[in-house]
Length: 214
Image 1: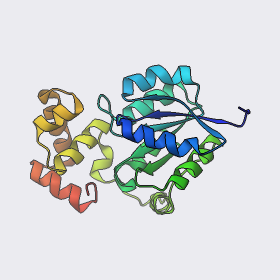
Image 2: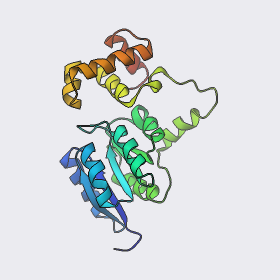
Image 3: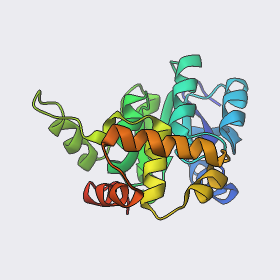
Image 4: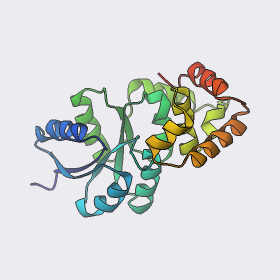
């Protein structure tokens, strides 16, 4: 391999997704998959050994929120370009991810060529965002932009908000995130206070009105 080869590390909990990504990247002569992980813990543990230039990181990991993993990765390896991959639309998580240090954000519905382009772009030290997201970011540059209530939530609180708004119960959220029901209930209570809302129904209405859920 030449010095120009881009080493990529994949962190995604679905084996079929990792296999698909590896198949796409295997067709590129300048990109090689140097390692993979299915949990946030494994990602933090294995990424150092893989020595990648770019990390593809899923937002929804079974043990930790992807943005929490991103923050830890950037703290340990600030030079590593992290490209977030998610099933969620850009307007749900992209800006939060970029603020946390991501080099770019792609939905899993993106075309394979867009993925390859994004990898090459962030490997070269640039940011990668879609035209639609670039417009959203530009609209927030002005001094008159007023932060929406959900923008002040922690990553876990925001994740809890979107899951409640998607119809999941506290017990279901706890099971999916591998947290206790008490912990999820505390997240729910805190986000209700921060957003000055009283019920899950009000949270759902807010999330739908602001395009936070599909």
